[in-house]
Image 1 (spheres, rainbow, N blue to C red):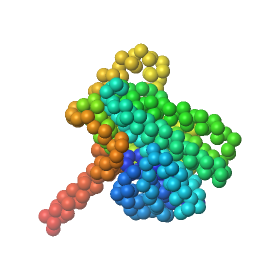
Image 2: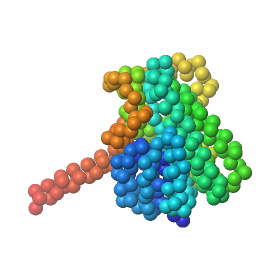
Image 3: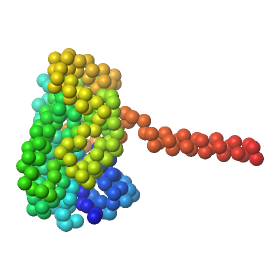
Image 4: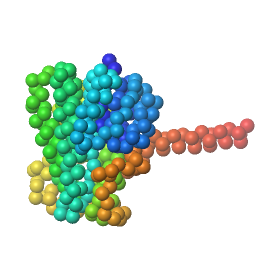
Length: 315
């Protein structure tokens, strides 16, 4: 059966990868994000990937009424919503007291209250329909903490609690599912796009996974809903250290964050994309990992060229 899938945060990183993943399965898509220009790019990508139909709705999840309008568009166009994937998030680096209050609050408003708004609208539709799957994107930072990311950490801890409460409340709704996908470090542009008051551009600490891998976990939740899926080889190790050895964890996390979570590239104070999107910086990958498919294509092309030259020389 062809599903109707809403993706919020569809223009970059995990959301864009998820849109492509569902497109490849032939689903109908309703894509939402702030930047109309990039939404149109993603629509073309998804159409080329095999989506049954694609609609785009420019949406700021923090704007009153925006999510109701998005849901109404999906229902008007396709009759129902089967899956709602929420990935929209922003980030700010800096010591808590040095991040402007309005930036901190907008991070929480987007990452936590935006998620709550999505859940409120999606669950209302699912309850009326008697079925539906809500997939929220958490983070390993919803289970542990790290310095210089207080707004994001606060939001993801709140989202972890919200997801758990919603799962409990949905137990008497047999066809309604609430899932949480919890990635560790992912190769997306969110780090370069972040607000920054620490003076150095952020980066994902090693080991880094791909947004496509997280997208596959999201699609798996849509197929076979699970309460939570963790994506990241060291997520469990970090959670155990945080819980079992808090004193040791607190001694190590600051130096490790400065070493592995921040680059040496300087950056002046900036609001990043916290308030306004930057279409030029939106992509699936952030460039922190090599694009292996491109490497394979390059090597394959070079091999073919060399082989052709050798054959001509021998003939």
